[in-house]
Amino acid sequence: MTTTTRTARSPRKIGRRSAAAVAAAMTLLVSACGGNSTTASGPSGEGKDPVRGGTLNIAFWPDNAAFACIDPFQTYWIEHRSLIRNFADSLTDQNPDTGEIVPWLATAWQISTDGLDYTFTLRDGVTFADGAPLDAAAVKTNFDGFLDVAHTSNGTAYGASYLVGLDSTQVIDPKTVRFHFSRPNASFLQATSTTNLALLSPASFQKTAQQRCLGDVIGSGAFKLDNYTPGQGVSLSRRTGYRWPSPFNKNKGDAYLDKIQAGYVAEDGVRTGNLVSGQIDIAWPRNPFTLEDRDLIGRSGAYLRSRSLPGVSYTLYPNVSEGHPLADDQVRQALYHAVDLKTFAATTFGSDYPVVGGPFDSTTPYYAAQTGKLAYDPAQAGSILDAAGWKLAPGDQYRSKDGKRLTLTWPIAPGTTGSELFQDQLRKVGIELQLKTITAAERNAVISGGQYDLLDTYFTRADPGALQFILVEALANSKALARNAQKPDTAARIADLFSRAVQSTDSAVRQQIYGELQGVLVDAGVTFPLFERVQYAGIRNHVNGFRFTSEAFIDLDDVWIQP
Image 1 (cartoon, rainbow, N blue to C red):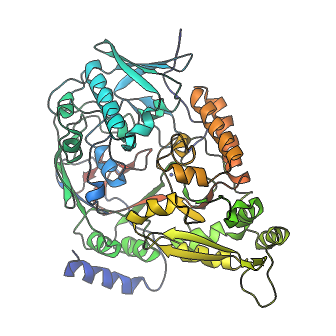
Image 2 (spheres, rainbow, N blue to C red; image 1 turned 120 degrees about the vertical axis):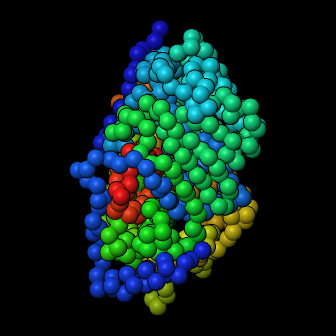
Image 3 (cartoon, rainbow, N blue to C red; image 1 turned 120 degrees about the horizontal axis):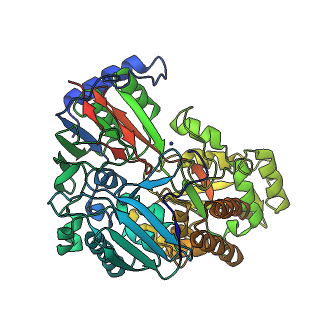
């Protein structure tokens, strides 16, 4: 027996340096020194009919050998996933404002009452860029291929986290496909809207996983992938006859742009300089623009767009193992009141930057703010530490207990955002924070050896189930981090909450469970959110129709260039 479910609703409403570039940036910087205005003219074509033609040039943060992959299922690199959204479509899409899952390549779906079967009806007339039809057999080829990669990669392929419990894919008829799970996975419907489960032509799965990573893939999107050269860039071109856009796109036909050229620029200042000098059309930074760069962009006549990345906020996780200061529940609770999150956001990113409200960014469905529990109160932090025996002796800068200083260690990557400000805030309540710079290659050994007290990580997905892959040891990418972050009784409770949430297809029930979960994460001192992760885009004003997807990626189907 099945329950017909057309949509699933979220319970809340939901965001090489050229001489010319250097000269332009320096000129604007001089003019910007008098203030911090970030106003900009906005797109020049508002109210006008779109114009076809032109090449859009984008500058991204670079990939490298470790992240050289543009296959939807395998990559987690945000920049690549943004481009994937434009050449590969998905079964469903997610409303960026509400979190609602809506039809796209699938026109309808049914979820069985036991949550083990998802049956999708496919849209007519959809083809891949090689002319192959997007039918049930093609969908099965995709998901069988996904599972093959998930198994051979030992679950390290990013998309594997979306398929927990998937047992088989069955072709019912050419337009109907059924997914069967060995255990309920209520997050699967949202997963079908993501770029990581975007569909490829069956011909793509005749290639090896490595060949797909390096760009031997064919999607059904408004653009086709022409070339991907790791470390250099990506090129896309418009395909003709496209008639199945996301319902959130205004353009219902062929894309307006002829081509998209995406390159890589490592230095934020150079990327901004290239934008304001007109060498690129969109600057897409990995970290939020600095206040200075935002001002430069606005004064150049370009404009800014931003949206919080859904999923886990930029969060620190404690090491509560025996012998570490944060094994003490009171010390962990004191940390919440020692950090001024509002000042942290404003000082680091600007006065208009959103203040983090909990373990998830505010664009995540089922988000429940924990702002009261995270309130800055240094006096309260001091009282809690005093009660825990960590005293601040007259003339001392840091607290001590039994002759031992209250010292925490945070291993960081070079240039970690806000680390010194966080260090300063803890110092004010008598906690010493040692920042230890490590390389990416050293990180796993540091985690497995427990050589830290706080560690940062995050996960981008518009579903709170993303946090399972950090905190539930059986599913976590780093089992040591999951184990170190919580005491056994807390770990069992959190795992149970996730298990109950993913087994329920009732939105109200999931809202209640995820609300409880977010409270537990703070009450038990498991997560220490520092800031929302906001994706910015700097855009020249002749670029019109820019849109963020629910994943805070770029959608270029509606984009056109004003001559």
